[in-house]
Length: 255
Image (cartoon, rainbow, N blue to C red; front, side, top):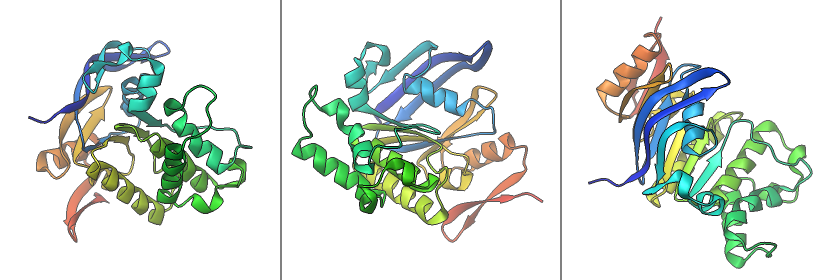
């Protein structure tokens, strides 16, 4: 029986006075990559924030077998890493210091970075090809370069669960491909990855795909399954079609 990394039950959440999530139940398998797709306004980012403990909600979220609300902030930050949309950090911080922020959950109060911290940060910066900028201020980077540094910060946590909301924003195609490689290595190491993606073709590289619309989960299945492809096509009003090309799934507009 597969282990469940994240379990959501009867999740309802609102933004302002509007109910966005309508009683969602979801199981995220441990050690795999799950992508969440759907049209704008489907509730994808809201759901991811609830799973991260960043939004008030009704219902329950369980992380690695423990109720999320019962975990201390420090324990939660050690077990769950987060990369959100339009993440901010002080522009005058160096790239190295920004990535080192990912190690704070593992460090005693006011302690200097340990050898383990240094290795983790270097590994994360090299993985995102940001190592050569480690001394540069974050504010001197392009939006794509900045996104790679923020990804490095999330990787440096070395958490067993990593949640990412639109991680490919501002990345050019080669670095999107690099991101796929990073996720693949994380999964091989046993990390559970959950991503919200607008790029459906990229989402279909995942192990599982969650299809959302109108604050509901309409389908949750294997990325390669015909039923999953049919659900994706349906939720986008059949304005796209999914085809196998050169050993991978490609999404094309339906003319």
